[in-house]
Length: 137
Image (cartoon, rainbow, N blue to C red):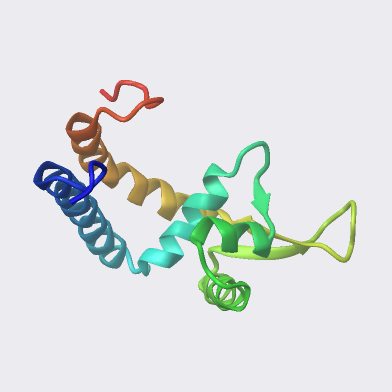
């Protein structure tokens, strides 16, 4: 066994982290489904609400945030568009570029679901003392 081998404590920490992460994700999945969305649909809406310095994102940017393939993200945007949650618009600066914008219905759903995530986020904050996160009420 080398000096840099993982210890039992390392495995326990990793196991605990993965368990807490899975608990958060399972609860998030349940919340999304209770509101008629898939977890990926909610994540797409959340990323549009939380995109820095603008109110829209490109398919490529959304694919990166979702860690998904481009064509999968296109299909997800299609489904969200059919549900009246988002819409595609041609960019004013470059008509070849398509922007995905959040519609009022999508924003309201994302805000409602995000609010329901706050208790579990507080729990994760307490559990892991995440750097850069403000104190949560």
